[in-house]
Length: 427
Ligand code: GDP
Ligand code: MN
Image 1 (cartoon, rainbow, N blue to C red):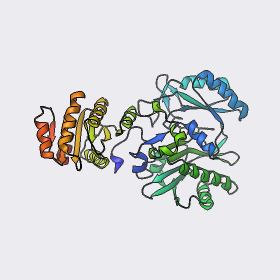
Image 2 (image 1 turned 90 degrees about the vertical axis):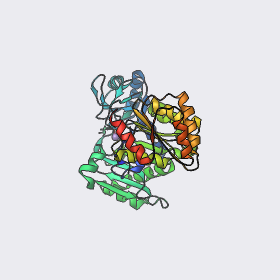
Image 3 (image 1 turned 60 degrees about the vertical axis):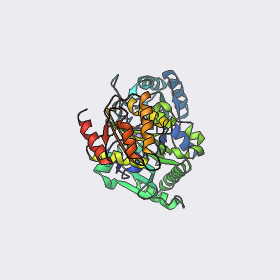
């Protein structure tokens, strides 16, 4: 259902899992790779040793420490909440690659200076890219081959699923399109947990030699435990690698956590990096509104998550492009209306606004008054289409009409969509 529009910053896996969950409108906390690896280590999952750094001088110092304990080679990794860093570009300088190998502390410091405080653009960041504020200095693993391993909650199956592929290190969506048979799925019984047998099946599916299977299976089982115990919605290890001596190791790690589980994981949620999050989503969160930035131009203000989703789908099918998902929640009052309108009109992508309200419990007459009060504070200077239906809608429409507000009235959901699509074509 959600495949017709694109959430900004959404990543991968939607094609692998048929949509909804990974793209999801549940808010999902992301953390940096170095933090993810700290979490993995605490559950006994093997990663290389490493240290984060925020300045080139600190990077050189930390590099020295890691070199002294490690193999003598380092990887310098830009820390942003997006993948594809390896083949990313720093557009200001033209420097290629947000993940680079270095064989001395000095070289690592120089690489860090090319990455820190620079914007990195990757396939997953969108054209605006992300500012690199931290680099991770990690001992380089001797890699024999790169695989893909992810754990996620799958709606279609109704539980955890492990996705494994020998075709790792690369963009998994491409593999899903060009070579779907290379992607294996292992549903896990959430009550029983992952058995050793199943973990060994997965390791064999990833073509580990029989003598390497037990260690790889142990790592996979531990990964499953982190996934469950941290209330993650997704753990993606790409690449999950085999070293030259046949050991499984996690070279990259991306976690998402269910925001509803925040009260159980204060330590994990303390790693939230506000600078990495969509400012609109953060602002909405402060006011208990649900927001997701999309890539269209019609700002949507809707009451109820179901209607908000339906609005996005319907608009997209009709040829329009929503600029955001926004659910006002059940009880619309002047305060929520004001905050919602402020958010929508602050979004530079918004070229018109569609207010789509169905009053079930809430009186639309009250909503109409709340909207008018809100618009005294938040001036709307783009075309506005308003649909108010349900409880007290006759009175509500009368209130709007007599208010002197400049807007286009929609007499039904369909009518509202038609009008938005027509108007937005001229913007
Ligand atoms: P991404 O591009 O953002 O997904 O960043 P990754 O952490 O996946 O790194 C990109 C690529 O760098 C990987 O696919 C590997 O090929 C390479 N790489 C990362 N860590 C190591 C390492 O420890 N040793 C070696 N040899 N290569 C690495
Ligand atoms: Mn990766």
